[in-house]
Image 1 (cartoon, rainbow, N blue to C red):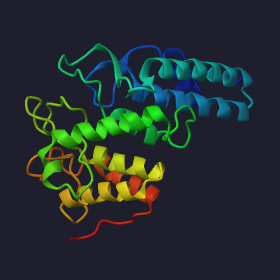
Image 2: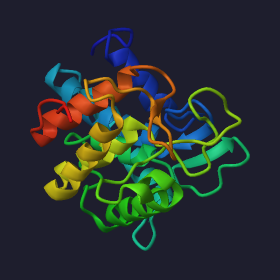
Image 3: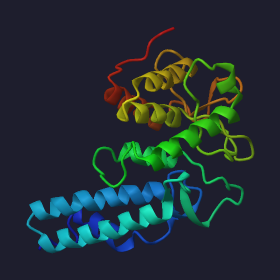
Amino acid sequence: VLPATMPVKKDLEYTAHHWREPNFEPWEEEMGLHFYNMLVQYTALTLGSEFALEMGDGGASEFYRSQAKELGQFIRENFLDPKIGIRTSSLVTRGLGYKHSGIDVTPLLALIHTYPYQKLISLNELSVKKYISTLTDTFRELYPVNKAYRNLGVAIGRYPEDRYDGYTTGGKGNPWFLATIGLGEYFCLSGDKTRAGAQFERVLFHSDRTGRLDEQFNDVTGFMQGARELTWSHGAYLTASMRCGIANFRRR
């Protein structure tokens, strides 16, 4: 049996014992139980169980496997609905007070970030397809920039009620590069290369055409704003490019 203080095992032990406790989602705005966090935790425990077995730690392996099973059941029972897709992105215990739609891009990010390691939720199952359809339709109608350039893919933001404009939390949310290209990555992974290409075109159109990607682009003008050269924006683009076989930015 490996000591519980060893690297990797220490993190797995913490996850296995505390996944039921409320925490913050990737936007660091709401406390609760979140689809993104829980799917990542499920994936970690599943892989951790296999790793522990390889390391000869059978007891830990069985414990992680049992917790992953419980966590997987919790995710399916509380977040997925074959009729409406993903019921909500979070079970909030302390929230913003104005985020009511339950629509958020984080479930999409969870699915692509854990692919192909988690086997709990298929990218092509009905609940996911319904969620993707709702997400896409919502932002297509929300942002004027989508209506202005209908030949491009759909610009996607964090969630419809977003008030963070890249500078203050009292404005109006905009499309995010990482969310927009994340949808493109999903289409690649699910086999829809045409729609994936359109998402890349949208991102490239709103970039500075030399490789720079900021945090957001304005929902009306289309110009970049928010955190300059956000690392996550570049990371999301590179990951999607590798998975879709698209290597570089193109100048226009």
